Length: 112
Image 1 (cartoon, helix red, strand yellow):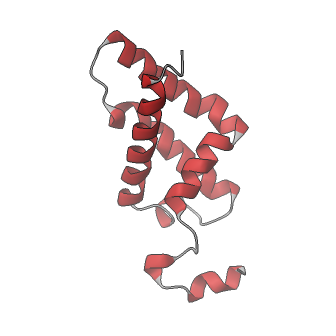
Image 2 (cartoon, rainbow, N blue to C red):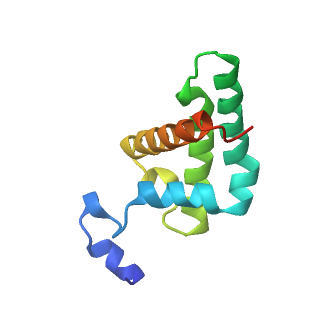
Image 3 (cartoon, one colour):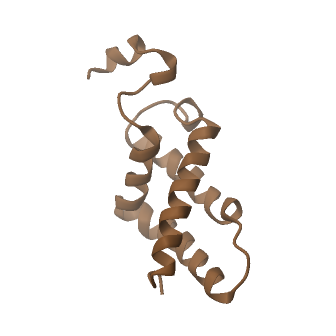
């Protein structure tokens, strides 16, 4: 796909790939983002889970997701701002995906 083709796509399908899945893959696989942002956030979830306290995924993961969306958008030059790429529904989908998958890993003993 060429950059000029982006303008020819309908607004509801601006990209020919799933930005939610792609952003999650980026957050987990970009070494710098993972080390500085993703791993610390998920490790904190694991600590909270082990302590028996209630986890508020919005409070503990959304800042990391916002940072990830920003870095992802800039790194791949998708738009001037993450708001042009990610809707609130996309952000919530990213949150649900990360939370459900990482909580499964935490319950299996990861992030000790």
